[in-house]
Amino acid sequence: MAISPASTAVFLLSLLTVSLFLSVLTSGSEPESEQVADLLALQSESKSGVIHLDDRTIAKFLTSPQTPRPYSLLIFFDATQLHDKSELHLLDLRREFALVASSFITNHNNSNTKLFFADIEFRESQSSFHLFGVNSLPHIRLVGPNAKSLKDDSEQMDQGDFSRMAESMAEFVESRTKLTVGPLHRPPILSKTQMGLIVALLLISAPFIIKKIFAGETFLHDPKIWLSGAVFVYFFSVSGAMHNIIRKMPMFLLDRNDPNKLIFFYQGSGMQLGAEGFAVGFLYTIVGLLLAFVTHVLVYVKNTTAKRVTMIFALCISFWAVQKVIFLDNWKTGYGIHGFWPSSWN
Image (tube, rainbow, N blue to C red; front, side, top):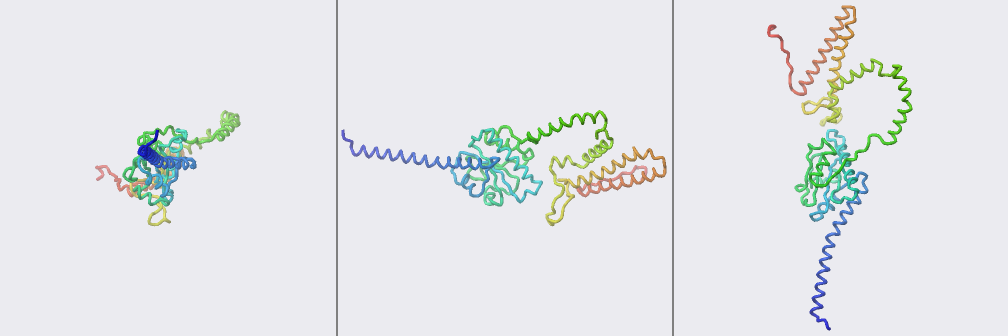
């Protein structure tokens, strides 16, 4: 049976149409798979799994591909010239960001292709910072698969959540991407080798320590140690040291008008530097030590004149210290403290 020319033409036309359709599908899927493969390769090259981006890779993975992209990017914006600004905590936040990234990758057995963690540095990628509209740090932003405008369609992490570090970053990821980060794998404070050495030293020294304890010859049996410890606890309490640790406050700041000048006392109630807390704590400690000396030592002095002179000296020093504290408080906050005499004295 002969095949008509019309049937042959229809068959060839159908075959050509199917081939073109398959080629379009293949050409559309290959770049996406290549982009995911490139991201996985960059992720494997990073120790923490955080991919370092610049203007070129931002264009390659975010602005050039058509939406929806098969992945999301969580980006940490960094600036090396601001690492010395301790109030920004950029280095600490960068370490916590790397912790979330490595924990997420570990918990997903290196098989996740839906979310990638990345960072970008200001000096290398100023145009990308402008593209995202980032003008302050710290800054973390999630670029979802459907984000066309990097500034308007991406989601910024609230800066108020940075205080909880890695935990708040993990919650941000889970709430926005519906992916599970899993437990955070923080490195142990001591390695197994260090723990083994400590245990070995304790076992070796245990007999000698027990012997010293029963003989009453340890430093814990020395009253001077307890006295020093009490003074330290008092100074630690009144100097705001716990506030400095929790808030990670610097001891001093550099003067913006004169970089060679240091600022130890910050005028304003919004912030307290470590140096001013220690200065006030030192003044409080002087008063406390003088009070302890007068009530526990001076009472045993039999010479009345020596008692009176020492008492007057202690009162003068205490009055000076309290006056300095009141002056600093008034200078810093603007609040004044006024004395009130009995009404019968007026």
